[in-house]
Figure (cartoon, one colour):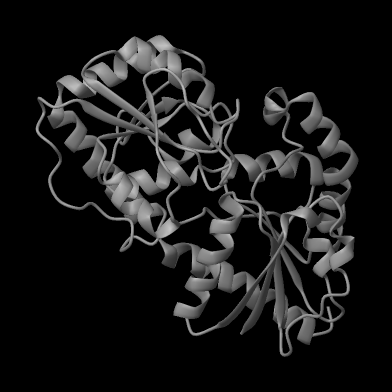
Length: 337
């Protein structure tokens, strides 16, 4: 099957999704055509309406912010919702400027994509339920995934008497919880190393206190980065899914963070992660001190994390469901529905 994957390049997890979807489809013998457009098109994607679908395309697969402009006659459109901005749980974490931007420019695009979509997918159960409450139409729930061969444990961890190496990965924002890092590092003090990687955006930077800012890493370098730390920090206040949590788990790295939406859906407190209430820095410090003192617990959580990633978040499980949807939608077009 030839699948067109048009997307605006945003420097976020949606870029990662598009590239992983293309690789996974190619591995199954399909013909994906990922096509990225400049970020400047995001507020007014209507300018892309005249972009022709690649010859021979059988299905269009886009994301909710822009998918409607790529709808073409006789081609089914599947829309994946990565971050449902209509979710009331997300509202507290938007700045006034974001609220204005979403209301004036993005929400009309999303509504158009939902209206024209032949099928809708949400990347987490939480997102699917939030959408279902509003839309009252069928929404498939398919978790994101990682390449479990690329993201995998790599050798023994460092000796217990060395500083506990803690890593934050994410674009700086209140939603991601990057603002707690300076206070967290100060509270932890000696015996801990806190570093951060500012996500995929080249201009993202965090430089304060005892936090070490890492240079930008290419996506293919991320498994090595995870495998060079002991704990991944996820002080996320709201997350639709949580790629970082899953990537860390696949590498056998325990997670410490807040018990919020997508993080809690990917991780399991006491099994693969140690989570506490949102904004409860005391509990987060306590969890990290516990892991620093107990390397056996770190190993146990890491092993459980890898097992959970293999059991629930592998590429094959996700692709079986996506390809099943593709086949259903294209057969409906052939039948004239």
